[in-house]
Length: 334
Image 1 (tube, rainbow, N blue to C red):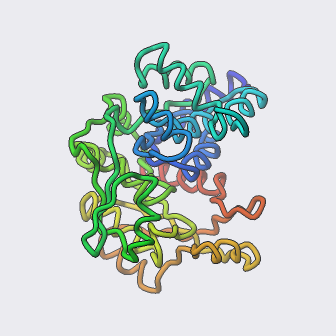
Image 2: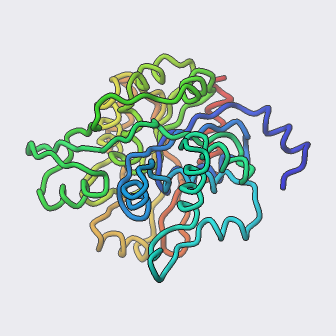
């Protein structure tokens, strides 16, 4: 546990709102909490696959998976508790289920509210900052492909897009009307920096922008807006995408002058690590020769940095480097 002095120092640092979902967001949060305690994570609840999808269907609750990952990333708890909440059953009727998801499901039943369940789980885990669902509506993610096909369900979109052999044109949710939490709007309005990503472009980051009035709320907030591009393309979702393609997708689902900064990796990835990804149809997200000039013409500053961290052959963002870079931007702009 951190000392009172450290807690006080961290509480005086800039206020961050981080928007997204999936592994990328939780990795960033683990680094960011070492630099500030003023963090609000707004997390997608559009996923419908895996254990989260089963709980969503069986219990009629919002999917807890991405929320759980972010809660654990910001938790200040014993290693044993984290292991427990990360534990996934391997046999029996609970095979494939994550204990942390079941814990949140139990809290949801106890308190009769997903929002209250997250708050109480945050208290149990001594979470730094806040973790908020993007909406409390039961939304389904849908994608329109460039060939006109319509795909429904977050877990189906990448595979079905691959089968169709067509890129995603844009995404939307059913129902189309959903609302953000008042806490999210307040956090955005009071933020010193608003960060989108890293995370799956169409299934983790952009879904948060589909909630009613959230684009306008972010746009009108005083804080600079930063988008962090993925390190690798994702099969069926961003095949062949470079940095500019990622940015254009964000702007297509928001507004042309939505972003102030884009952060991208410029570090080369060792070929032996890349081989496994390439076999799976994934390639590095590269900066095009003219990306900086094109983005500058739109008043967007492109920052290229060495941001790679390889662990057990998995390519991840270096969350400490990334967090320090974000902190520099926040302090410079504040």
